[in-house]
Length: 466
Picture 1 (cartoon, rainbow, N blue to C red):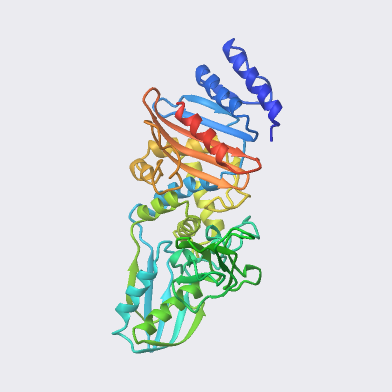
Picture 2: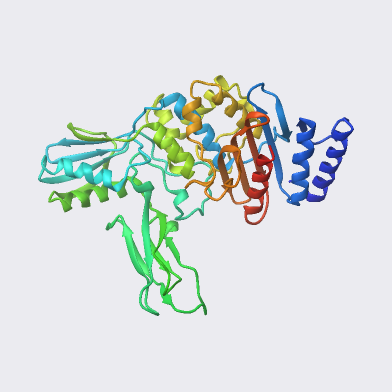
């Protein structure tokens, strides 16, 4: 990290040196249009913020660098890594690719076969159960088949204590409801536990309700829902307080063992329709018998838009393994990441020897890239045959996306992907500037302490200045 005082001195010198057209001081890289350099450097200086900054802004009509600050520096991209994953998935799988969830039948046994669908819903499973109820009256064994992808549920470099948060849901080819349970919390009677409903309603999870409804703020503790993740169970504890005047609130928490979760919910849906299921087993032998019903997802483009709009980590990892499955089975992280890097090198002409990919989503703190590399990919995709589809996946300000509270009061058309980890705040995408034409930009801010809001405001100020 560059200390704040040193960085302030550096920017002051840069503004002065650019004014007199002299070279910048040694040890920092700052180049581009001199007036833009002065403008952005002044914005950063006036913010008083301290972090490792890396910025690149490129004019897409002529390939000229409008602004660059330490743009070759390797930093953590966080969810900006999804830009690579999204582009590679469109390249390898195609916009119309569909994930399949298949049900096979042999004798009185059923096989539920996962195809890595990140958007499979409880309603989709229920539709499969409805289609089956007239084909079989009882099931001896419901077999879980997950051969499409490997059995690793967590990415390389994911923090061990991510716990039960929805963004760290385990990865598996058989996935439903984002591998999460939704808890609906409402006030109960005064000094009594809160009212709890779950979706899906399933015996797969258990919970202990230690919470209390309160009519005052004395000793008030924020509601907390924790899965017993250290013991790898699906038991939850609900604690803390809810005001007796509060509205219903929703909390999403991940589960352990997504394949068994999906199969258990499917079993319960079958039984609700009169089809009794005796056992659930996991098999490594693959499916057997005949295909009796299948569910196809919406197009890959639909899933990619969900991934980018919601910053949906599970989808990014399933995309990575699905890309791998085009080359080798079962789909896995090493093969998928290798193919993504090959795409970046061969198509976007990025020097991937100076880039490290550890996962598809950017949750891993082992993943390192630069704003220059991000902008190289953005430039390639903008000028490629994938341009329209790729740009369609990017969020824009004021919508129900990761940009819902940002970039609202501006007449500049900006589409961008956010990236956030503790101590990291990034933003990359496209600016359609009246003065400079279409621009590709990437802003990384790593290594700070505290909440990211001030850094997000700085990012917004930089890009709207263009």
